[in-house]
Amino acid sequence: MLQHIRAAHDNKGLTFAVVDKRLATVHVFDSNGTWRASSPVLLGLARGDDSVPGIGERKMSDIKPAERTTPAGRFSAEPGENSQGEDIIWVDYDAAVSMHRVRTGNKADRRLQRLATPSVADNRITYGCINVPAAFYDKYLRSTLGSREGLVYILPETRPLAAQFADLLGK
Image (cartoon, rainbow, N blue to C red; front, side):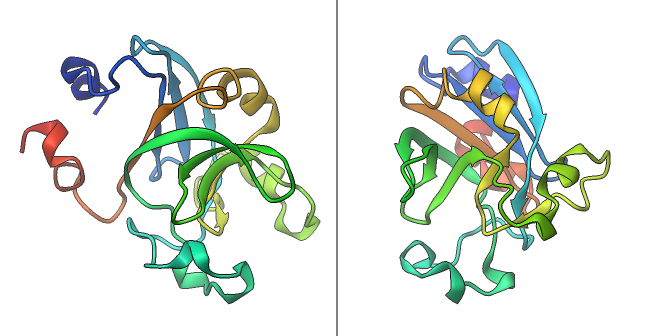
């Protein structure tokens, strides 16, 4: 995927990130396509590559566990704020999917412990947002995608890569 992004200049000179849902990892690249850093991430609880239509307009309490997906695709990301005034990176504004620092308010979620385990099996817990360690967000994301427009490529987990990114991969 990265070779195709670079060869096609698909990022159009913008910084970008590639989220690999199968490996629960984000990779950050500068505008030239040079790798900057990678980190484990937390993802939507449910497997799937599409957001439920209208999910971004619903209260979180009304979202069923099977609807908590992190969508796959190519997204124009932009910096923003959540309803609490925290800086975030909007990935899919309409579906209310963002990339932000991991929240540790509910201790029972064990989010920091989940990020620290070598297994990706326990990295599925969010409503669809991409949670990253705070230090990683502050060091690598705030200065790139968190300060200007960029791109986020989220790799599929239930569809073939060639089907999800047919235009980019020339299939």
